[in-house]
Length: 284
Image 1: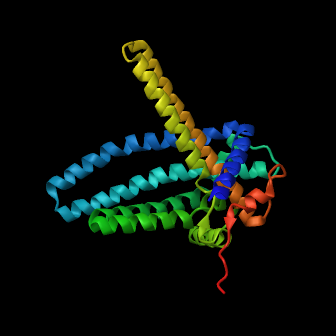
Image 2: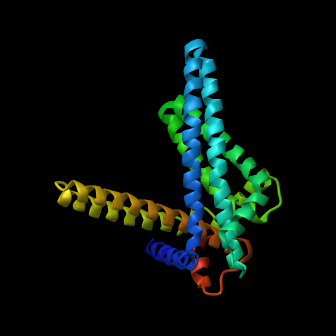
Image 3: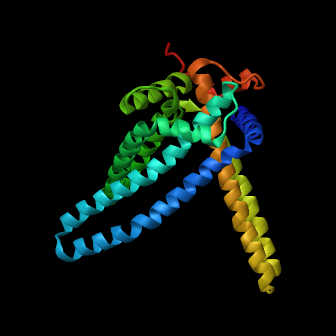
């Protein structure tokens, strides 16, 4: 366990060093967050109106069906935006790993060229999301547990889909299948270090919140300072979230590159990346 924690920390440091060399890559998750927010605001009002009309003049079953349709549309739009900018980031990272200088425009051009596959993957993900929500709503506790387990399995199977959308010219079903095969072949049943970035980001966020709460208590009787502290706290948490999202994407691309071809950047210790993979033990 301690080796996994140590190794995860090393991989986080490598991802961090890569991000420090390419700070502009944080633009991608920022654009993704803004796009998803705008889409949510745009879709919520008409969706609410339609559901209100359906609930007033249609049967409960018809209203439920319309609810699932609207949920699918919402997921489709939001997932398309998220996947688009994740593909752009992955494309830029892969280009840098190939020794070429990558810009935000380069990443966006890569995503534009893969837009058809991006929408297909968003549609598949939206379908999975709607089905899992239906299982949670109608299956009670057992349904919630089943949906959570399937959701975890889906996340594992699709672990490499984003970088594969950049490099593969296959159908989305084949890409998802290949992602599952690549994960199984390299990770086996154990993923070591995959949660390193999330753990570090969570710890940093908690520390920032604790410091922020302490400062708020100290200046709570001074409105101007209180507003300033709250604004700085929110801004800091936003920056941490952007850094964490970018680091997670970089980490995923780094392990994908090694898992796919055995190639790693010349300034990385191959032993540490090898340690991120735990193949299945052979029986007997």
